[in-house]
Length: 369
Ligand SMILES: *[C@@H]1O[C@H](CO)[C@@H](O)[C@H](O)[C@H]1NC(C)=O
Ligand SMILES: *[C@@H]1O[C@H](CO)[C@@H](O)[C@H](O)[C@H]1NC(C)=O
Image 1 (cartoon, rainbow, N blue to C red):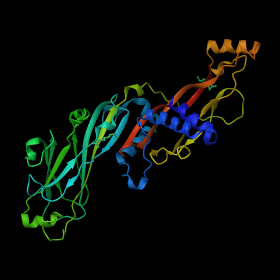
Image 2 (image 1 turned 60 degrees about the horizontal axis):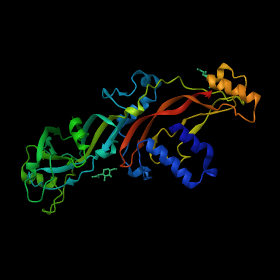
Image 3 (image 1 turned 180 degrees about the vertical axis):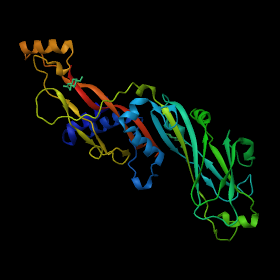
Image 4 (image 1 turned 90 degrees about the horizontal axis):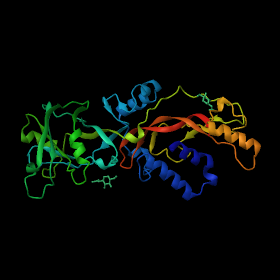
């Protein structure tokens, strides 16, 4: 279905396709990608880079052997799935003194789980928090990191701790290379999918073994006239969500790469067609591949139908009738009979980076039907 839409888009070309038709075709394809509206065409520079783990998985998924072995399984995480999203954190940094802990720096974390479609089964949600210091404060080797889940909205003037449940306390070394904390949050993330159930998380950072005077430069508060000598850590949080769309998980055998001959012939067969995503205006949100060999079917299904044309019994009879009455009955059509999937890495409407496997994107074989 999707490849046919793409083919229609490509074959008709910008010349003949009206703007309305083009928009409709694109909408159809995008909704099959799970993007109900067209992804914003923001510039690449303002978007965050693709996590290196996702690049590795994308390259691996391009290897046909790796794909065939375990369809709809993400072996990197050992779970079922055909969609991997890096859901971006949208929480604020409450810089300066936290209301509940005098020496703490507080960061809210919020992951919008409505990017998952209701049909998707969540297999894994792993929180990854990366800390990065530009400069290390003398004498302080570590910070204590506490992670809380927020169970209900906090009203002004109430103790925020009453609405929090501690999930994790861990100390993180202060070092110039970044440090990462990872934690499995699958069941919590599943509960966030229900509307009105996501109050997010709170992260508290406390430098260990520090005195208040020494900490002053650590915070960029307006309370004190000192220039901060230590820049705050950059905190980058993502929720790696692996999910399975069961409707897009048929067995996907992939034949070895199709090398189609370029010999001209009028008989039904697969023809080479490279679709460049630039040509259809999708280069802004599809990260990789830049294009791919989609191919298409074209040609006649003449009488007598030879075996190589992969005709059905019905098609064999139809060619016979056509040969007797060419005006009254058309030839059978030359159509795809075997298609194969590709993997795509793209930005969704919330600028999350997503790796997803799409079926029926490449024509491998044609037949008369
Ligand atoms: C979450 O994302 C959905 C769909 O993109 C959007 O409609 C909604 O407003 C977002 N919610 C929040 C709290 O940002
Ligand atoms: C028919 O199928 C065979 C393999 O089953 C394939 O080699 C051949 O190219 C197909 N015919 C066409 C017209 O694609």
